[in-house]
Amino acid sequence: MDESLDKPWYPLFDPDDISSNEYFSIDSGGFYWVSKEHRNSRQEAWKTSINRVCDQGLNNESIGRCSILVNGGGNQYYERQGYTRYVYLYLSDMLKTSEIETISVRRGNREINVIVDYARQSRSLKV
Image 1 (cartoon, helix red, strand yellow):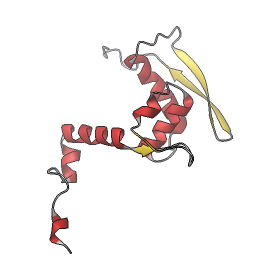
Image 2: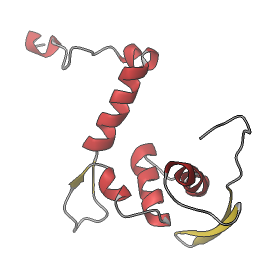
Image 3: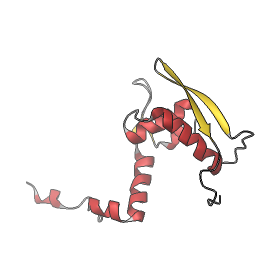
Image 4: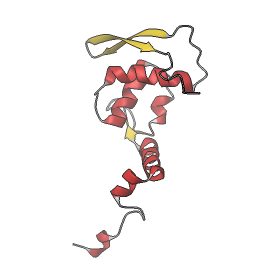
């Protein structure tokens, strides 16, 4: 083996550092988020950054696509639709007139109604 390949690719090369250091784990996640290459079809040009998907707005397609890009598959696809909308309410300027919303989510041939309960889950939480 060529000794030049023994060099660390980055000064912080120990994977245990990511699991034990909050800064490194957030930095690693952020690096993945902005450097992930993706495209929706073979005819489409490659894009860099998951932010390009988020720029499409809060809709079933963009939530599903981000979920697949981050998690590598469609596990918990329907649950993520609801969780994303719940978090978005508190991180954005969106106003809701009701505490419960039913959203119709289609994936392939399957359509499911997802119920999102916007009530705060903890009364001690101050946003």
